[in-house]
Image 1 (tube, rainbow, N blue to C red):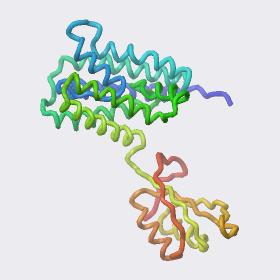
Image 2: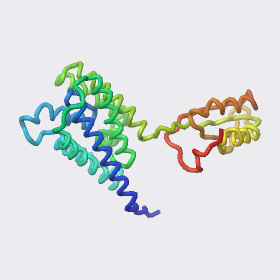
Image 3: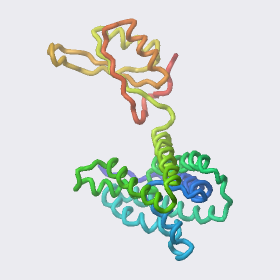
Length: 290
C-alpha cells in the first residue's frame, strides 16, 4: 500500500512537540547538568565532556556544534534504516537542541546543589527526550548505531547502549571525578525512567489472559461488573489435547485486583496470566464502568 502523506496540521503539531522536547532537554543541560559537571549518556554525554574540555580553547567545540556534528552520521544511517521522516524529525530536534542550548547558555544555573541538579536535571532531560521520541524523532544517535552494529555483533541494542554508556561514564570519572560520574549515572537512570514514562504514558495497562471452563460466565461478569470488553481466543490443552476458550482482556493497573476477584468468585480454578503492556489504543478503552 502507498504511504499516506502526513497532514500539515499533524506535521506542525509534531514539530512543535519536538521543539518543546528539545528545548526542555537544553534547559536541563544548561541550567542543571552542565553547571554541576553532571552528564547524560550517549552522544549528549560525549558532547558535554568535549564542551567542558575544549569549549574555552576552541570556539567550535562547544556543546551545540559538537552534538550536531556527532549525530550527523547516525542521522544518515537512520535515513537508510528507519526512513526519511525519522531522519528529518531527528535533525530538526537536534538543531533545536543546539539552538536552545546556546540561548540558555547565558542564563544563571538553577542550583549548584549536585543532588538537586541530578534529580531535576534528569527528570527534565528525560521528559524532553521522551517527547521528541514520542513524536517521531531522536536527540541521540547511539541507538541507531546499536541497530547497525548488532547486526554484526552478538549483542542486543540495549546491551550495546549499556556498554557504550559505561565507557562514557568511566571517561567522565577521569574528567570530572568519581563523585560527579556517580551523580551522572543517577541522572541518566532518572532520565531513562522518565523517557519510558513519557513514551508509554501515565495510564499503565495490563493485558490479562484467563483460561476457565466457565469462560462464558467470566466473560459476561467482566463486561457487566468491570465494563471491559473481552476477546475469546481458541486454545488447546497441551497435555489433555482438549479444546479451550481463552479470554483476553486489557484493564488498567487499578482494575487488576477487582478483575482477579471477579474471576475467583466464578471459577477458583481459573488460570490467570497478567502482563504489562506498552500502549493501548482504540475501542473506546478508557470508557469503563466501576
